[in-house]
Image 1 (tube, one colour):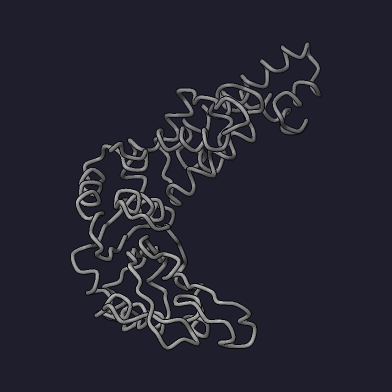
Image 2 (image 1 turned 60 degrees about the vertical axis):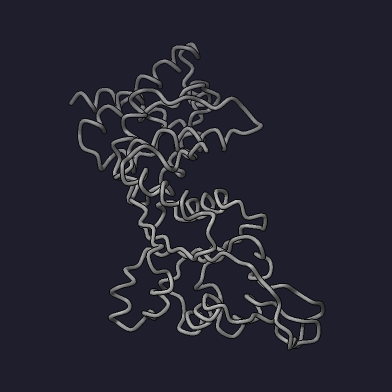
Length: 307
């Protein structure tokens, strides 16, 4: 099976993908650990795709499940069970029958939610609110968090018996800065997704690609996706993404040399647009998709970078 660009060739990720391929067909619950934006939801979806399960993949942030409505949201409810229950409604567990339920941010889930989830993982019968008969459900539970659950167990904010239910099926997802070989395939995928059905995706120029690979990405894949979206908004109708199309807040932290290269690239593009517009600055700015003040700043960047 061909791996997603999310799961590239770095040793840690290769080992992770192998574990996923081995464990995916099982019904065992699994816990994904990783920083915010590292791709935990994408990994969960990948595991579901590998599993061969025929049901749906459903996703929910655990803290969004309020204690007062927890049973109704997870197990569902029968018509007339309470005020406003106008028809039978399946819960997330029933909607995930023969599929996968992915519960994100489990590290900040309420004690009541943790207890309920523990009962589900222990195989307790699930029945809708207002019904007395349990409903058979075959659901694969995947969970994720960016929290240190061992510390939370010591602090008594997370149940040790719930953590133990995941047993050896814990998957540490490295941050993007430790998976640099995946940055360009991911960027190309995001650009293609944003352009789908509208235009031919532009390609990354060498300088832009080098900056993306070298960036720190504190927000991981989420930041990379935003950077690609920003670049497409500034590339106009062009067929290449240049260094100056990238958001400056990703460029600036990387040092003076990169920022100077960014300024020179912006200046070159501005001068080229000005020449193509026959010296008409308004038309040149419009062709670049920037305002006149921004265009004037770009014209001055080459001189500023040289100084």
